[in-house]
Image 1 (cartoon, rainbow, N blue to C red):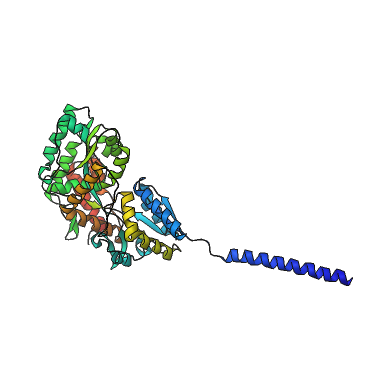
Image 2 (cartoon, rainbow, N blue to C red):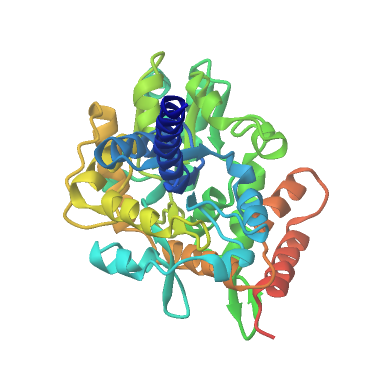
Amino acid sequence: MKKVKVGLIFLLSCLLFTLTACGGSESSSIGKKEEKKIQFFVSGDNVEGGALAEMAKRYTEETGVQVEVVDVPYSDMNTRITNMVQAGNPPALARVTGFNPVWRDHLDDLSDTLTKNHVREDLAIKDNGQVKGVPLDLTAVGLFINKDLFDKAGVKYPTTEEDIWTWDEFIQSLETVLKKTDAKYGLVMDQSEHRLTTFLYQFGSKGFYEEDGKYTTNDETKEAFEYFVKLNDNKIMPKSVWISGEDPASMFKSGQVAAYYSGVWQVKDFEKNIKNFKWASVYMPYEKVRATNLGGNYIVKFKGSGVEEEAQKFIDWLYSKENYEELASLGGYLPVIPDVNVDYEVGEAGSNAYEIYHNEIEHSDPIAAKLRTERDVLQLISEKTADNVIRDNVVKVLNGEQNIDAAIKDIENKLTDAYGKN
């Protein structure tokens, strides 16, 4: 009996030891913090979005911290983030082109990121002395041509600043190309307010600006609108892009369009995917003022994600000189920090393109950058927003729903209602 009791005690002791050991392992597993993941919302094509995805992958390999790049359609980004913020479950980071007032009190201050990395301060989004959006890249509007079509038609295009077209000269060139080649259209332009306002500036427009509490514009704005509407004649420009949303990039890449009014973000894509003709980036025409609308994307960091510290470390890593140079190279970005050497790894057409964009920026009317940044700040701090009111009103004019005077008045009223100082 004694032996049985000792044996039973020994068995129970072993069992207790095993359970304790197992319990310790399970306890350490339960007590162990979940591996923190940085959720990074991005929208963009394979070039720009792919560049950030590649950098996130490299960061994970270097640090072991996972950065989950979530591809969100551009048109859904604002709404999706706003819904998540209101639900108390924001992403850690996002790359955005615009803002929503709901985000205002939920964005972390990134002033240290701006100053420590010498990021261009004029492009930052500031609110009450805090930096709520740090520019990630610089973009500029520009013009591409189908070089084969121009050469076939014997039409010269500007290769120096001295040769830059006026808009009338440019349209005459397009008419010649259409006459002497099998091109279907002369020009396509992105259905974008950003592109359209660049066009307005080139005619001497000062855009829509606040004066004595109300928004107004100058006479050149109407002149530019009239010119643009006249171009949408289904010959020089197809109405389908602005009325129906047909993809202008695909139309240009088909080889059937002589020129494309878009921007620097297209260069890497064209280098890789245009195989059926030679293309070139050329100086944009202007009527009264040289202008390219400056823009780009911002990085924003949300409070309440639970990984604020980890997100900041990733931002700091991304903006370090070596890593930022790599990001700019992969994404074809114009840099927003000084003294970086970007190897874009492009051919002759691409190299010339980047040189031209730098020249366009250098000689652009400052209003192009000023108004864009001001409008983005207003999106964040105002109770109302007035997104795309210029674009939407021009679409109505093209559809025959209203005239240009009515469009201008509606734009002024809606901007005043959203951003005017009462």
